[in-house]
Image 1 (tube, helix red, strand yellow):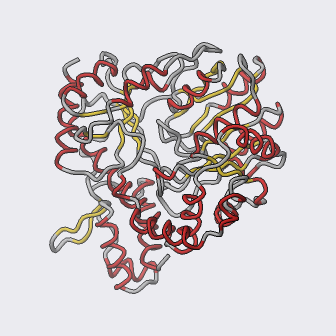
Image 2: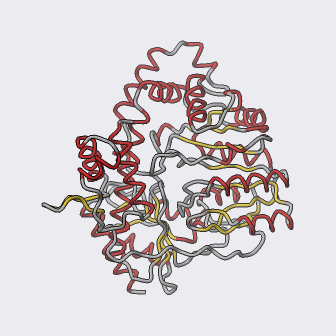
Image 3: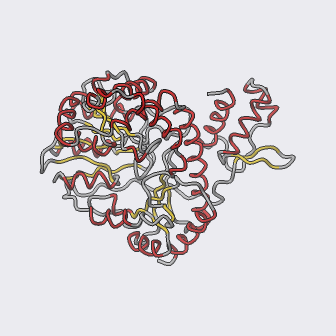
Length: 469
C-alpha cells in the first residue's frame, strides 16, 4: 500500500470512529503535512482518494470537510431478546418467495445477497481462466478433484498466514462455495434431531440448512455492533445438549456485527470448556473497512474445534462457486463426506482463482472494492435519514454490504416486501432471518450496488410506504 493510501486510511478511521464528525473540517494540507510528517503531495493524493470514497468534500476557499452522510442520524437497533430455547425450522417457502423476487433485472436489488458484479474484475478473471486451462496438465484434471487445487490451497494458506493463522495445507478442503462447506461441517458433527446454536437474527441459508438436515435451532441473540450474547450462550450450553454452534464472528449477516478480539477469545474458551465445535462462517472476511482485517475465532483454536469456512463468492467471483473450509480435527471427515457427495468443485475454476490470486492483483482489487462499498454505505445511510421515519433504527457496520433496519412497530415487513416489489423494489424482510419468524418490523437492505438516481428514488418510495403503516 502506498503512503498516501495509508494516510487516507488513517483519516478514514478517524471519521468512522467519530473523532472527525460529519460537517467537521479535516486538517488542512499544511497542518496535516507538518503533523503527520508527509509531503503536501501525499496529503493531496490522500484527500482526493477520500473524496472518491465519498468520505470528505472540498469547499471553495475553505478546505476539506467530512461529508454530512446523514443530516438526521438514525439510531442503532437494540439487541434482540432471547426467546424459546429450541425451535423446529420451517422457513424455506418464505425464503424462496423472496429469492424469486430478484430474478427481474429491472428490480432495484436491495434484497440481493450479493454485491454488484460490476465491482468484480471479471475480464481479468477470464484471462486467468484461459491461461490456467491452457497450462493445466491432463493429470491435474483428476488429481485436483480430491482436496482441491494445490496452488489454490497454497494461496489460501498464505492469506491465513497474513491474518496471523498458521494453517497446514492439509487442513484445507476446497468446496462448492461456502454453503457446501458449511453443510459438510454440520453433517460431520450432528444427526437429525440434534440442537444447533445459531444467531438471532441469522442468515436465512443457515435456517434452510437446519430445516433440510432436520436439526433444531437454539437462537442466541446478537447485539447489532458487538455480536453474540455470550451470557445467553453460556446459559444455553449449560442447560441444553447443543452439538454445534454456527456463528459469524465478523460482519455478521444480516446485522453486520463484529465481535471484538477479546470477545472472540472468550467465545472460544467457552466452547472449548464444553467441547462444542464452532462452524465459523466468515464469507465477508475480506470486506472490512479500515486497515486491519478482523481476526477469526479460528486464530485462537488450539484444539481443532473450529471449522472455519470462507469463499470467493462475496469478494471476487460469485459464479465460480469456490469456497473452502479449514476443518481442524474434522478435516478428514469433511473431506470424505465431500467425496461421497459432490466430489469436487470445478477444477478449471479453482485453477483460474489460483492464477488470479498469484498474479492478478487481488489486494489491489479488494482495496478498491472496500472503498466502493464504504462510499455506498454512506449514501444509503444518508438516504435513509432523509426519507425514512425518524424512529427508524439502523446498524452501522464496519464492512460488508448490508444494513439492518428496524422500523416502527406498526410496520409489517412482509407486507412492505410485497408492496415494494409491486413498485419494482426488492428487500429482505426480517422474518426470513429467524427460525421463529421474529423481526416482523425489520428488513435487510443491500448497499452493494453503485448508488444512482434510481437508488435514491427507491429509498424515497420505501420511506413513503413505511410511513403508510
